Image 1 (cartoon, rainbow, N blue to C red):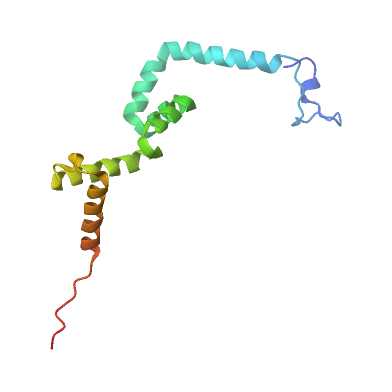
Image 2: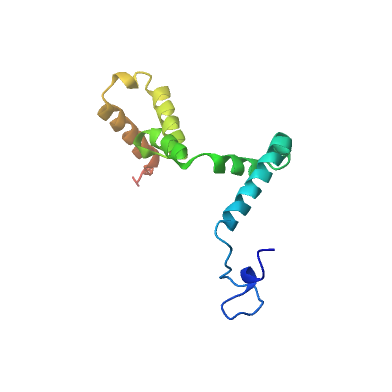
Length: 137
């Protein structure tokens, strides 16, 4: 217990725990350091086994833990490397579109980008066009 009852007295002097608990200077830091040290010791003893079990039994929590440990700067660096500021799903879509274009136009990389784009737009318009039935009576 912290010296005397000072840590558990609120401003009115009642013996109730208060949100305004006053710890001696440096006490919270020392407690935090001890907790971190205990975690370090336990991690060295059984961390690998815990991770292995977690990866097998709760893979989504394992992935969440791993993602939480990646520094934010690293995530931003990865995101910045995708052209056009695209997210991962949009980038995959773009790669699929490029593959489809190359399948239909094998020499697409030797044509002007505007010509390839016009081809793609025309194909999209044709796919979306409504068929007009023979109206002659």
